[in-house]
Amino acid sequence: MNKKENLKRIAKEIRLAIINMISEAAHGHPGGSLSCVDILTTLYFDKMNVKPDNPKWEDRDRIVLSKGHAAPALYATLAKKGYFSEKILSTLDKLGSILQGHPDMKSTPGLDMTTGSLGQGLSAANGMALEGKLDKKGYRVYVILGDGELQEGQIWEAAMTAAHYKLDNLTAILDFNGLQIDGPNREVKNIEPVNEKF
Image (cartoon, helix red, strand yellow):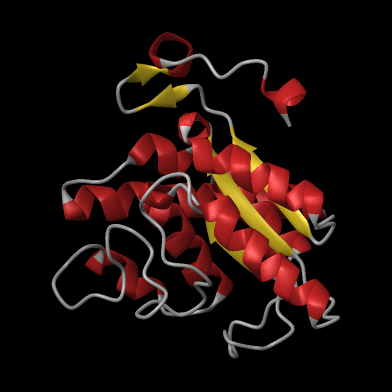
């Protein structure tokens, strides 16, 4: 099996885990979770330098899931990567579970940022990337943004900050699925042309 086929297989398994998790919990955000699976799979299984057996390893690459409502996707990916048992996935958002509705870095191994309030992830990722540059570390920082959260002003302030400090160790990835909770982005508040804005 070549690398591309293997990544597709892993992504399929992660999608199935997400559907099972959300079904078991009887709530969640399936669309936003499923739409970022290929991004997470590529990062964790092809790009990022991480050690699941040492989640706080100082030189690890970092990731911020700014669209925190897609936590089931991140949890399923972390479990598949070996940060914790896949059996734990069935405890999504249950009392006492390490897997809450939004990422909580104090309870879930492998998380670099607690998220939930949209628009804050890029600012947090900037801080991590700037710290890495100042400390002369080789790690990269990835942030996954939802297209609906581009309506938040803090995103644009953070984008200007990243450019100002020349954070070439930061990669912002936009999960452009065209939807937000109120409907299609183009109808709620059109964010196009995104490429020109960045």
